[in-house]
Amino acid sequence: MSQKQDVYETMRDRIIYVQYEPGMLIDEKEICRELGISRTPLREALLRLKEQGLVTVYPRFGSYVSEINVLDLRDLFIVKKNLDGLASELAATRMPDSALEHLTRLVDEIEPSRDNGDFKRLVAIDQQFHEAIHDSTFNKPLNDLLEVIRYRCRRGWFYFMDRIPGLQGAAVHNLAEVLVAFEKKDSAEARRAMEIHVSCFIDAFSKLLER
Image (cartoon, rainbow, N blue to C red):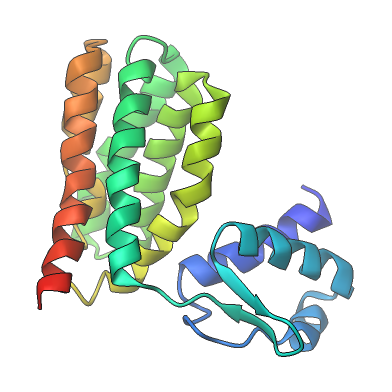
């Protein structure tokens, strides 16, 4: 992995997993010192994170971790429901055996991770499950659209995980049913099961807006 990609992934994951809180000023000098890098790879990473909606840049004031807006987050998951549903529909008949085996291993990890209270692992399982499906569509335009919203959705889920009852299990709800649809190569059922899965997030954020 290149230094540029490594710096980007480090910063991205610190934001997604809320090591860097929403609204936090990003201390470029301190991060460069910590990571032993120059300003160039960090600023390239921040530009990329800005494009993904994870960083907000104020000229002359600096770069800040973007705030989380619940209404925007709910709407992002509405978009995600439709895009992920389409991805599942396409992948159902295109998925290589190796990807299907990978999904099976991920589903097998759900219960042990939930029993151990390893919620960061549950987020990772959900992430890898979706990415395997996206890759199996062999549809670059669709994947590009999903890339735009992927990390904002993931950060929102992790941020509210302990703040909304039932959200901890939403990431892995219905994934076993999605897997069954892929095993049967049933495109319609794969789309339906995936849309049910993503709807859990929409419902959770909608209830938060109603408070």
